[in-house]
Length: 227
Length: 227
Ligand SMILES: Cc1cc2nc3c(=O)[nH]c(=O)nc-3n(C[C@H](O)[C@H](O)[C@H](O)COP(=O)(O)OP(=O)(O)OC[C@H]3O[C@@H](n4cnc5c(N)ncnc54)[C@H](O)[C@@H]3O)c2cc1C
Ligand SMILES: Cc1cc2nc3c(=O)[nH]c(=O)nc-3n(C[C@H](O)[C@H](O)[C@H](O)COP(=O)(O)OP(=O)(O)OC[C@H]3O[C@@H](n4cnc5c(N)ncnc54)[C@H](O)[C@@H]3O)c2cc1C
Ligand code: HEM
Ligand code: HEM
Image (tube, chains in turn cyan, brown):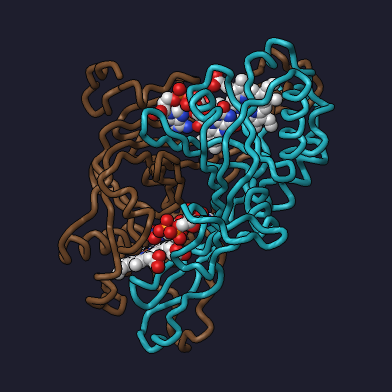
């Protein structure tokens, strides 16, 4: 592994691990670009290694500054295997199909981030409670204080992992197909945009009458975003 | 690694690698369940290992029988590193937020599949052309024959990887929150369903007048699905 290229201020160092080589003009190492993609989706895919073989597990993540967190069972194989090891955490948003005149020039509009570091397990009941509160508030602002408080048993069953982002890259494609030179080929070309939306909320069957959707959740649904 | 449990007909063998332990009642090894999830989304996340460290790369995949395929540049680090090695390919659909009365019982409705095997690179121009045609037709039925034909140079630049699925698991959560016993806690509980939709197509700026969206793509947009 060669020495990292000296980092730009506000950018992650560029190393052999995270240097975007393919379609490199789509790459960025800016903290702001990487963080914006991490924050745009609640789900990530975490890669870890057991006995030399790779595993990719989907999970929810949240970010505080340069630190990314995720949670699960204290007995989880995924969390136990990842703890103390190098992991790659990837977030992906697919924004559209890019339809060209040739098969070769088809593509996808997307935003993705790959972040690298060493996973650690959070220790201490207060620290874990704060992190879980951050998670809930990050997804659903204002909700934590309305909930039945967490029990000691629930806390004990739960592990929170975190990772300081050491290397990272964002990669983004947007806009129409690039094959403008072939416009004479008589086939439709353009973009089929796509997006993930929240549909109408479904109250639990046993929800007592009179309990309305709180304004925070109504606003989330109305915002058209997931977060 | 212990011996695989003898497989059910039409199911993948259950091994130490793919046995669903956490929330195991959400797991399935049935070919039909695994394939339905692979087919429901065009994007997967592939885990592979370089110098002992994990990488997770998002890419498009398609399936023919028990074989899953993906493509990219013949010079891709990802494809070159994966070739001949064990990989884990994961597909995830997030179907909703599950809102409970306690933080602990919050969850997500989802469908995900993790499939395991050894990645191989497809050899032979005809085989590669057929596979890329399968890819295009799988995403956009009827499109291949309308396109400007592929060139020898484009074929040479492209690698297709494939993997026979050796072990696999599906895991699915659906329905309302499970904390029905806590219905007296005065907070809204239920599901915020989510779904990915195609928006109105955007023709390329240089698209000549008179070239309409073909019926196949119009049907795809109208179907509300991505595939
Ligand atoms: C929704 C979606 C669909 C895609 N479909 C395809 C496809 O079908 N075929 C295909 O070839 N590629 C596809 N890509 C792009 C793919 O993720 C890789 O960028 C590409 O395959 C090149 O990989 P590489 O390892 O050879 O690149 P390299 O440039 O050699 O990778 C080196 C480093 O660059 C960074 N990097 C590479 N890719 C990404 C990324 N996507 N996001 C953030 N950082 C990155 C990482 O730090 C990586 O370690 C898709 C991406 C998305 C988001
Ligand atoms: C959108 C989404 C969000 C999620 N968010 C969280 C979260 O925030 N916290 C959390 O703990 N879990 C979350 N999960 C579940 C997570 O993917 C794992 O199932 C869980 O963390 C248990 O992992 P494990 O390795 O300990 O399980 P184990 O049961 O020990 O895993 C053993 C084997 O079971 C199979 N398996 C495990 N998980 C899956 C899966 N998701 N899909 C297919 N096969 C699987 C695999 O073959 C795996 O190798 C989420 C899943 C999805 C799809
Ligand atoms: C529906 C059809 C197709 C779609 C949606 C598609 C999509 C994509 C996407 C999203 C990428 C990643 C680009 C990036 O790194 O930002 C890619 C790369 C690539 N595709 Fe395709 N593709 C399609 C068909 C084809 C076909 C038929 C060929 C070959 C003839 C091909 C050859 C390639 C090559 C060589 C790359 C690598 C580009 C690079 O990394 O330099 N693709 N494709
Ligand atoms: C917004 C809040 C939360 C959401 C959306 C959420 C979501 C999830 C999801 C999707 C899973 C995976 C379940 C599965 O494997 O199918 C999970 C597991 C788990 N969550 Fe949460 N969670 C939240 C908050 C919490 C909190 C606050 C705690 C602790 C108090 C907690 C403890 C756990 C535990 C212990 C598991 C592991 C279950 C198991 O594998 O047996 N979660 N969570």
